[in-house]
Length: 314
Image 1: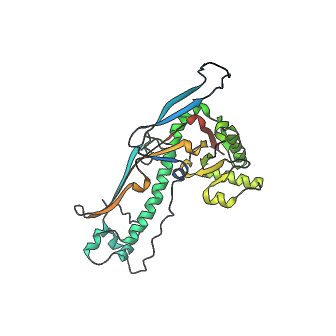
Image 2: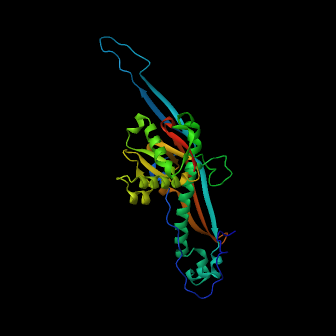
Image 3: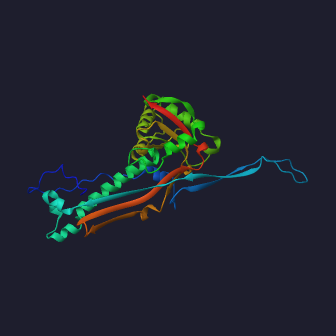
């Protein structure tokens, strides 16, 4: 079965074949923000070490105390595999404006026209980045949605691991008028051992980020950089070094998270540039085929150092 969907086109009559319009390239912001580690082909331990120190009184002799310790433990990152298989019958293009891209001869059916291929790849990368971004946060192996059930995302993992560490166990009503106060409260609740680090972030749905920046404008805060907020969907919270980031992957959820970006781990099978991605002509099936395969999962090194705020959207 061909993967072309051409029902939105009319059969070709002589006309100027206009350039195919592609969606803007969409890259996963979470992948750019968090720690990405390769080499995950199955459940793999994230090794952790925590040192506790208690200074002892000086003097001669040797004494020990259990207050000084090195704790070694692990958290497991479980990746899931995914793939895309898409067949294309090039002859399907002959009845529409796309035939303008087909050279003479039946041999043309053995490859996708460069114009169509370029549009396909641009759209594919944009949509793929969007799907992966959402799965990173909303993934759930128990979901009935194909784009979400390949691995568990941060929301599911951290809801379990941080339930006792929530900033505010009471759900807060989030709106333009409350946005700044809620974010300010989260910032003030971040543990001192975390807040002193240089990669502390507050992560929220993109729509709530827009409400937050609207409130900053209303408050007329002198340091507000609207251009940066609009272009990158990230901005420093006033009077702090904490970066507030809006994420498409959190859209439609009622979670705001805070912690070090390096505490969030994305595990992959291999470097992204080595992801299996190929297009070829299948002589047996007389069609062009596309395949993409990969493996991914997420985990947090220290969930107890990540804060959660549950919200309702007013």
